[in-house]
Length: 120
Picture 1: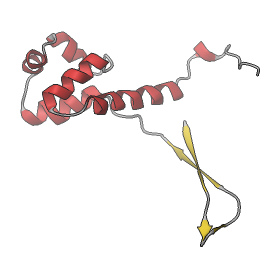
Picture 2: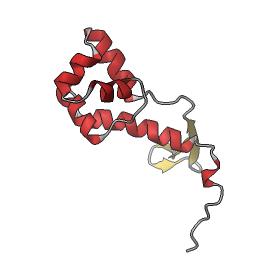
Picture 3: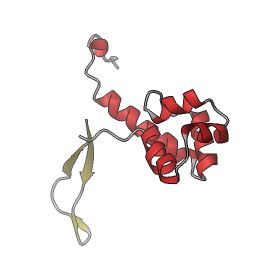
């Protein structure tokens, strides 16, 4: 969808006119964190999924599902990724959140047609 940013232009200490509304469209789907791990870590270092799974103490199948973008990055997996790669838990969870938000904003399924707004 879009994010709206309001900008107020100033000259000296006085505002110039009305606030300007700028819209930034997010057309590109964010990259799945599993793809980032596969390309930037596994392929770059020449490490197999099996070896990485052993280092992270998870099953090869679980890591394979992650790097092949079949499952999301959970808190537990983000912690293991961060410890294994000397990165932050937040970096992995932020990638997953950006993807989740994009997918929710671009969901065109019929699941939400009957939802009504609350009256205040």
